[in-house]
Length: 81
Image (cartoon, rainbow, N blue to C red):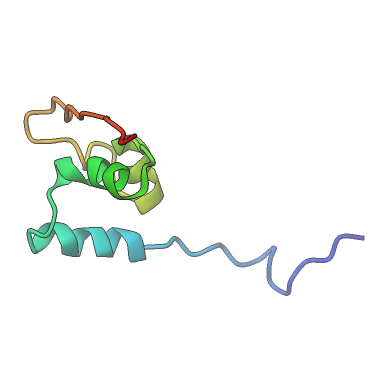
């Protein structure tokens, strides 16, 4: 027997917007630029997330994190020993 929470089958899940709003605040206030987000995540946490993955996680439209030239960003992924 499957147990479902009340209204699970009738209510649609809400789409999270907190990450998108947080990212918009950082960008709008020039705390970080679009091109640096992926490299900053890598620098601070050692995890590489492509711009496409970050856009999906944050609920951003495709291409939101690509620089204005559309070339993407070159990153030097050196690790400390």
